[in-house]
Length: 116
Image (cartoon, rainbow, N blue to C red):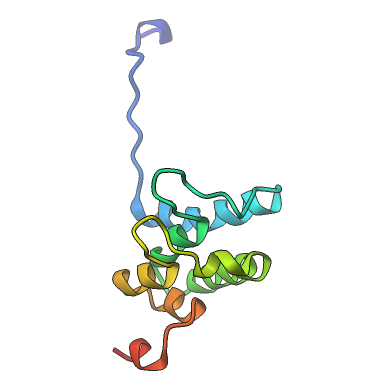
């Protein structure tokens, strides 16, 4: 079948674990290219911290990359690491809701919550 007769529609298959790990890599790559870490979504009030706080690494080898990215971002813009979104939730609150242990640790969860 010649290419011009193929349907113009395409299907994209996304494997969640690949996409998920790619989020952190893309976030760091964008930062390294000069992305604005202070950007806030006008509708939700979410920052990059809210987004990464709920990301669960698919395996133990990916966790250091998540921590490193969150730590670098927190070092650069510490105020946003504790900023509330329009629902009043901080990145720590989102990490706690999602039980994202690495993010709870990075964003300062009390020790008793970390052990639950």
